[in-house]
Length: 120
Image (cartoon, rainbow, N blue to C red; front, side, top):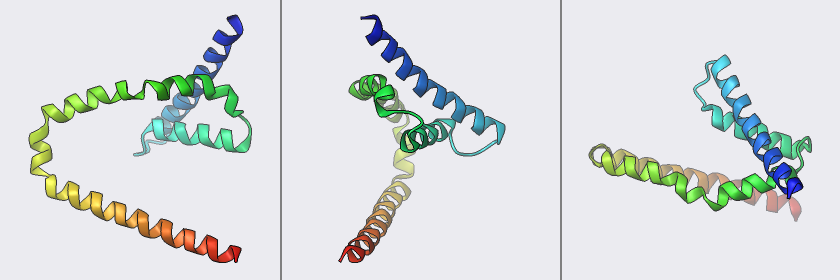
């Protein structure tokens, strides 16, 4: 029981530490990128490089993913409260969604084509 609690605390601590580091970097360098995104990149880099083992963050990450839907409730309430802003900007939102999706589709297809042509 104590070892399970230790692993949850360790994994939550690693996630929180990367978040705090990202927030600090964002604030120190006055970046326009959110600190949470920077923290996510820090955690990703640590996982890819092997500094942090995946099983170290797995307990808390699984718990957060399991209950992630609860995090969308405040966003949904905000969208409902400010729907008139969405309606005023509906065309711009739709155009950016369509063009952004097409851009990602084209870039990924070109990259996949290049990767697959190298294998042959």
